[in-house]
Image 1: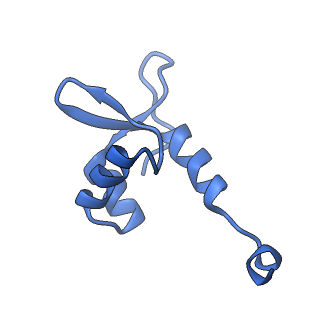
Image 2: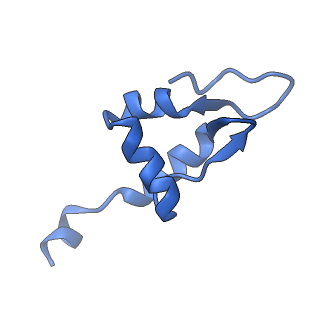
Length: 72
C-alpha cells in the first residue's frame, strides 16, 4: 500500500480490492463491514468504494489492544 503518493496535495486513496489484499480479507467482508457501519471509513466515488489511507491507519490503531487489556 503506497501511503506517500499524493496528487496536488490530496490525501491518497486506495480501492476496496487493494485494502482487502492488504488486510488479507475477502472483498465481500469489507462490503459487509461497510453495510454494518464497522471497519474503516470509506467514500464512494461514482461506482467505486475508496478509502483514505489515513482513515485505514487510524482504524487499525483503534483495533490495537494491549496484552494486559486482553487478559482482564
